[in-house]
Length: 452
Image (cartoon, rainbow, N blue to C red; front, side):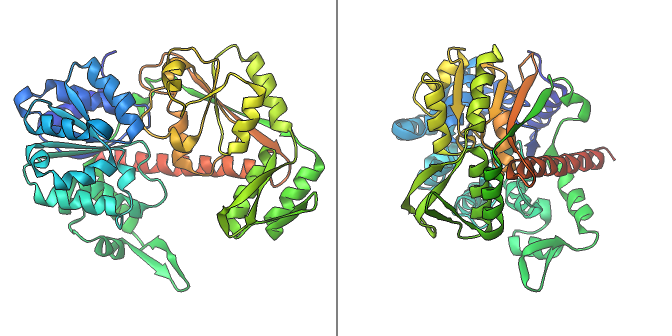
């Protein structure tokens, strides 16, 4: 397939020596942009380290670099030392490693002395400016000045808060982006807190606009019409009826953080835990911990209803397509395993390749393990959220495992929503849409700033 317009712009900028953050919706072709830049770079000048999650370096990056006929090694697991040595000798132009193994490269100075290009995929892995992971990357970039270009990549530029942009953009521009090397100085310049709400950081008047003006030149993203080149995502929420007693238990947990089922007391330690308990009730049951303050104390699943089971059985039987089912709770996968004995969890060895080959009529995945970079689009175009997750980043990343750059058909996303007043299933879905729209609004403002 030919490159998208934004990919051609990105390759041109990279070949001219620029460093920046690529903010493109998951599946929009970030990996291909970088691999094309690698291919067009003279072999003697290509000495790149790519940092990405383990599944991504073995799946998306391995496949992409193979397609571009670019030699590489996996700086991870059993091949870590051999790949590092080959990279240091100039035998491999690209070294693929993980955030955890990248920190260990501080002890392999010859590797970092060889490096000229650094690619962080996914930059939100470095969103915490106080993390050891960011501190290690920072030390490396300050010490090894021969690293000429740094590129960061993300599909979710704003996971939770603008504060998380500091470390991601520092990687590509260091002090040039915010005119400071200090995270506290950056934070206190743009944000403030109110008394007794010290963890809620708010923009000073007019500072959101100033911050966005500051970061816009450092971010590459497609124009709105360039996204239109991809087939659409078609979403459907299926509202299922549940017994009145389910809604009653749900309200009790939401209000009191406690309930009793068949003589068993179920307690939630705080409001956040109560939310997940309510989501479990929506999905069919609830976990009871021996000690509600200690998740390691042991737990049992107390079933309450089968509404989602009945729906997913009929849905898969009538789908006519391969279906990827996203679950959050182990109990939900156990239910799916009983309904579909041949179902495979994509964390199982060989299951990803089987899905991509179209050999799995039904597969299951946990959103947290399917997050970034996996190319699953060849296996099917239907995804179902059996459980709802309140994490907007992994929700959107999961959808974009199927909605990726080289597809030709729409992707169908289905949500199974327990239908009653106050349902946390519906509450979470509405919240996810709000978070998505907030990020889209940021992208739109940055596009205006970049063209003004």
